[in-house]
Image (cartoon, rainbow, N blue to C red; front, side, top):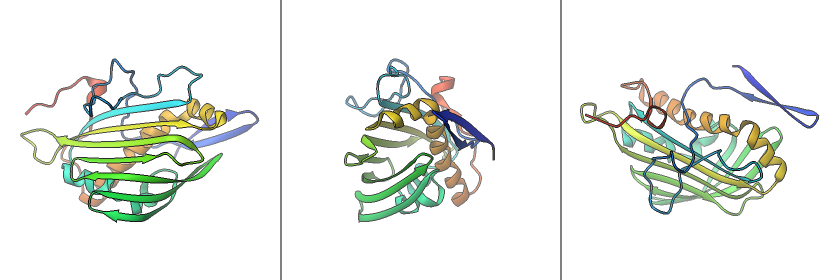
Length: 216
């Protein structure tokens, strides 16, 4: 596994590269992920002085909505396959909601936070954190919609992550490598779906980057 090194002050931080899934970084005008009128779908194009970061991805994948949902909603096992997730403990679990404590750790960050997760099977998984020491807020949103009519084992995956660090230092680190972190997070879920369900029926297609429409 390759290592990507970044220098901050007098310290060097190394981030492992996962050469797989494609995230896409866009501004407000470019992002076409359809969530709601009140949800923004942007990432990593804010002024450097801002601590707010957003990322938006849209992929056509060779797995069903149900297969994608089962992995993304499996919060208690995040520590097994999500990069830098050291611990994931579900405190409350209901059909449409769960509450979990998570610990993320990669140099120099090693923090815990509580995530409140809204579940709408098999369409949506939304996780929010507003009480963390690391973030002012953290929102992760996954939406799953039908893919190709001619390929039943396919779906469109919309992925959004929005966060704002409390610390200026952590915000500076995000400017250096959080685009890579977001890509690896997105790719890790797709890889896990493959491990559980076998090969995809088609390679993933980055719809935002290619400007592709989902057609039958």
